Every structure is written in C-alpha cells, then in structure tokens.
Amino acid sequence: MTEDKKKTVAVVGSGLAGLVTAYLLHNDPQRRYQVRLLEQKNQLSLSSESISIPVPHDKKVIWADVPMRAFAGGFYRNLIRMYDYLNVRYRSQPFLFSFARLPRRPAAPGVTIWPHMTHASNFHQIPPVPLKLGLVSWFFEVIYVLLCYLWFTVCCHFVAPHEESPSSQCESLEQYLQRIHLPWRYTADYLLPLMSSVCTCSHQDLLNFPASDVLEYKRRTHRQHHYLVDDGVQTVQEKLARGVDVRFGVNLTHVEPGSKGVQLRWLDSRGGKEKVEVFDIAVLAVSPDIVASMFDPLKATLCKVPMTTVESVAHTDRSILPPLYGTVVKDTFVPRHPTRSDKAVQNIHFRSNDENTESVHEQPNSIIVTTNPLTPIDRSKIIRYAKFRRVLRNPESRSVINDIFRDEGRSNGWRNGDDGVYLAGGWCWDGMVLLEGCVVSAMRVASSLGVEVPWADRDE
Ligand SMILES: Cc1cc2nc3c(=O)[nH]c(=O)nc-3n(C[C@H](O)[C@H](O)[C@H](O)COP(=O)(O)OP(=O)(O)OC[C@H]3O[C@@H](n4cnc5c(N)ncnc54)[C@H](O)[C@@H]3O)c2cc1C
Image (cartoon, rainbow, N blue to C red; front, side):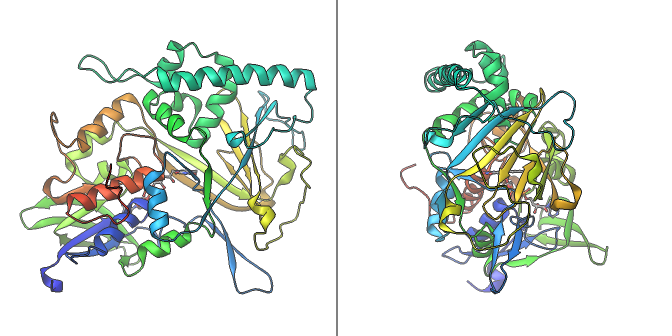
C-alpha cells in the first residue's frame, strides 16, 4: 500500500499503552497505517524517571527503574507474552517485606522504626524474626497473620463479590471485607499496607476500589513469582518505539472528530504556537482527566474517575532503614554492574500510619526508592524526585469505564472507537490500573483496527 493510501493514526502519549499501540499499528503485517506518536514531554515517558547509573571504567550504564515496574505471573499474562515476543530479558525477583507502624507524630531523625512482622514473597523462605521482637510475640503474631491470611485467601477463591445490578453498584473492597468479617487489625496492619503500595494510593482510596479488582489480583497472583526487567524498562521502550515517527513537545489540547477525520489541536512546547492537524484515527493513551479535558463527548463521564498524585524519591539515605536482616549498611553510593547476588532477595519496607503507607525499596545498586514518603529523607541524599498521576478505581468509575468498552448491549453514550477515536491506558480495562491494562487496551485497539497481535493467545 502506498504511503498516501495508508490511514494516518495519531497515538497520543508514550507511556506503555501508547508505545504498545504504536508498535502494533506500525508493524501491521498489511502496512495499512501511518503512525505518529505524540508526547508532551521531551522523551518517551515509560522510563523517563528511571535513573541511568554510569559504571566507572566502563562505557555501559545500568538502570534503576523509577517506579519499579514489577509484574507477576498469572495476572500479567499479556505483558509477559509481549516481553517474550520482544525478547525482553526479565528475572524472577524474590522480595522480603517488612511491616511497621509509624508513630503518630513524625519520628525524630535517626530514630529507628522497628518492624513488627516480616514476610517472604510467595513464602520462598522462612522470614527472619524482626530484630526487636521477642520470639514468643513473633510466634503468636505469625499464627494470627497466617489464620487471617488463610481466611482471606479462601474468601478470595470462594466468596464472590457482589456485582453491579440495575439497583446497585458493585461491592467495594471495604464492604466486602466487612461482609467476610476479616479482622480490622489484619486489614490495617497487613492487607492495606501491601495492597495500597501496589496501587500507590491511600488506605481509604484502596477500600473504595471495587472488591473484584483486589480479589482478581490476589487470585491470579496467588503463589506466582514476581518479576523485574533485567536491564530496565528503557529496553522495552526502545524495542516498541523502533521505527515509529515520534514527535516530542506536543501538548495536545483538543480532539474533535469531523467528517474529514479527527482534528487534533496542540501547543508546541518549543515555540508555544498552536498547531492543528487532521488524522484518520486518534488513539488517546493518556489518563482519564486529560481525555476529559480535551475530548468533549467524555468530559462529563470521565470526571467521575478518581485520581491521585504519587511521589517517588530515589535516594541513598540509609539512616531511615532498620538494620533488619543483618544487611551491611553502606552510606555511600557505589555504582556497579549487578552481580549474581543482586538477583537475590530485595527488601521492601512498608511503614504505615492510619491513612497511608510508605514503601521503601532497597535496590541492589545502593539506591533506595521511597514511594509516598512519610519519613523525612535527608535532602542531600536525594538523587531524583518524581511525581506521577495515578488513576484509581471505585464502583462508579468501574461502571463508567465498562460502559465505554462494552462490546455490545446497553450503553447510553460514547463508546470506544466511535468517530475514529480510541482510548488506551492502564485504566482502560476492568481491573487494577497496572501495566497489564496498558497492554490489554492497546491490543484491543489493534484488534478493532483489524491488526493481528503477534503475541495474542488464540485460545482466549
Ligand atoms: C509510583 C508508581 C509505581 C507503579 N508501579 C507499578 C508496578 O510496579 N507494576 C505495574 O504494573 N504498574 C505500576 N504502576 C502503574 C503503571 O505504571 C501505570 O498503570 C502505567 O504506567 C500507565 O501507563 P499509561 O500508558 O496508561 O499512561 P502514562 O504512563 O501516564 O502515559 C501517558 C502519557 O501521556 C502523556 N501526555 C499526557 N497529557 C498529554 C497531552 N496533553 N499531550 C500529549 N501527551 C500527553 C504523558 O506525558 C505520558 O507520557 C505504578 C504507578 C506509579 C505511579
């Protein structure tokens, strides 16, 4: 097909959803699409906050991903198939989690916050006894936690959450936990810290999630390994964007479908000038608040999708970490190649107050990444500070989003693909807002446009 016969496609946003969509359409075996990827930043965004660490006496750099971009078997089926297809190297990563409660008033600098429990991901080892906890107290706490965990796991598999009905919304996590009588202390000290760190949101935000999201995540990841990409997600980004026409500094402001195609308006961040261009198809791979601001048919509905802002700080302030497992406390930052031992266990500390949990991830390259920081960090030891917008979920937003992506049946308003406009993103599916949703929604756009997805599971 000649260039001018090809359909022109604008993919807006270079997070994972935009990158996968652009990759699939650009690599259409029938070459029917001329794809342009538009991004407001001056670089592709999937790894824009990752840190490249030059290795002394070596031309290579190593990457520390911020955020971590971890994934797990079971839940991330399409992401894993895509990584396999693209030959992205990833490794199974065991974690040791520690749980601690923060004092009501911020602890003075240098005061150690001792954990009350440790847990090995997937039970890959017997977790060490937290240093300041007596063996007997620890033993009784372990029994309590195990019993609650078992009860929650059984319920996840056998007690289905209430689904949406014509008279009511679906059940929230808070309602579900009350219904199954999960003890509040377990919820507050273990379930909320762990799951709110996965969703990087407050405890109440998580309790507002549809119960089905959390149960589905738990069911699918049960006894599965966690994984990390070996050389950082910049390798994924590189492979997906290869050959795609990418324009940076494009701040899209308005999307308007018309008889001649979809008109996009944007501000060029370099010249500040407004530009207008018409494409046959537009794929908006941006968060719902941005879609609402630029695309009139979804203005009213997507305002109902809750969002939050998350801070991540990469630093080397080890003084905030308890010497949990006899780890050697190094206060200096030593860039070096990952070694075999780096692929061993990594520590993640969850430290909570009543409303929030900070998660502190010790990376093997001496960098610590604190997400949602609650404990003060020595400013002189901060390497990078990043803010992310995060899409949340609740029963109402679930219903709104499902309506947009429903293939058939009842739907009152605009549906995905109407007028040549498509949506993609971690939030564009019926599940927790994670990388799997990016891949699933991008695959959906490709399938709607008749493009074969090379890693699709034909049996699904
Ligand atoms: C701290 C943190 C940790 C996380 N950890 C994990 C994890 O370990 N595992 C996991 O699976 N998920 C994780 N997630 C969630 C996951 O990262 C997101 O779900 C996913 O990155 C969303 O990708 P996306 O492509 O939908 O959107 P985004 O990555 O938000 O991409 C949207 C893009 O659109 C661009 N854009 C926005 N507005 C405009 C405009 N007007 N014009 C042009 N471009 C625009 C943005 O610059 C951005 O590049 C984490 C999220 C956060 C915040």
